[in-house]
Length: 94
Image 1: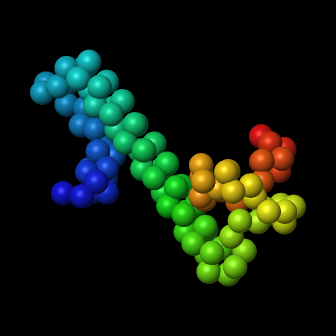
Image 2: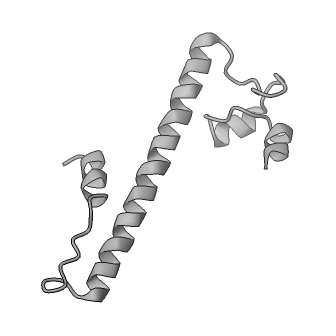
């Protein structure tokens, strides 16, 4: 079973049959489901960022800020190769 399949099965609806599962167990199951949903969302977000970076590499625009068009510091790109903004522009976005 792949990690994607495991994540998908972890996000499925939690059964709330009180006769077979106690309240604490159900709460644990719902918390696990919530965490799995968030993990899947973050994984999809990261994949979108990587796809964007690959498209920028293909177009020759990789390493330039999407806001001001200045060159992104290479140390920033070493930390996060999917960065699309320079530090000053990213700071303004926050």
